[in-house]
Amino acid sequence: MKTHRPAEGTRDAVYQVRLPVSKRTIELVAGLIRGRRKQLGTRWRKVTPGTQVIVVLAVLRHDQRLVDMAGGNAVSASTVRRWILEVLGLLAARAPRLDRALKKIARRGGVVVLLDGTLVRTRRRTGADNRRNYSGKHKAHGLLFLALTDEKGNLILISSARPGRASEITATRHDHITRHLREAGLGALADLGFVGLDDDPNDAPVIITGRKATRSHRLTDAEKEANRLISRERAAIEHGFANLKTWRILAKVRMSTHYATTLLRALLVLANREVQQ
Image (cartoon, rainbow, N blue to C red; front, side, top):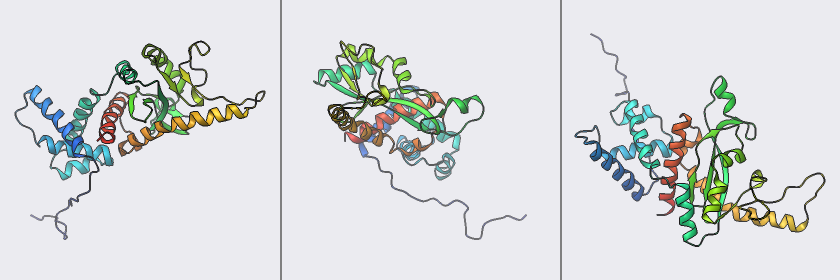
């Protein structure tokens, strides 16, 4: 019987790469996995919680292919997928709720939060799903997410996923963010895409935006200076998005809308853990 073996040896070669996450993050995720296994009464698993953490974080941080990670750890790709979904669910459950997060900021003496939206790109789909996820603003397919941060740019909320064609104002109204801000006694700084969002802009404004120039009204020097001040204060939220998108799995999400929401909220917990170390 003939066997076809490559002349250079085994077919699979395993290489090592650096995983740029802190020890505190690894310990956090490993603790969640141990607690989950204890809750389920699991008597045996293929790998230890520490190994599962490394595999999952490598996929999230470097967007490694599941088949490649499975081959390097002697498991199947479906097993790696189950590990990822398990960890994402555990982390997403730790994401802060909007009302509690806003009240916590108010108790610490905060007066404003930062509001903005971002498009997380997805693979192109066929049929009606393709048209729903196409963003005319970004000229790309993706899912729209809203985010709230504190004045320093620390993420406190990631909204549910919306189709890429949705507008930021519509998503904000659907989540009743202005009502939650009023109940907490806070305001929000936002860009010009949120002009017209506030329900009661004259008596008690909650959403603070700049001014838009129109054909009939050119901006005065004072209005231009106000726009510059708001943009300068809002720069921190871009740092929050940058910290979130260091997890390269967000380069192009290959999950359904439900799992994409879970993914973003899990990465919020991980990003805050890394920043606050």
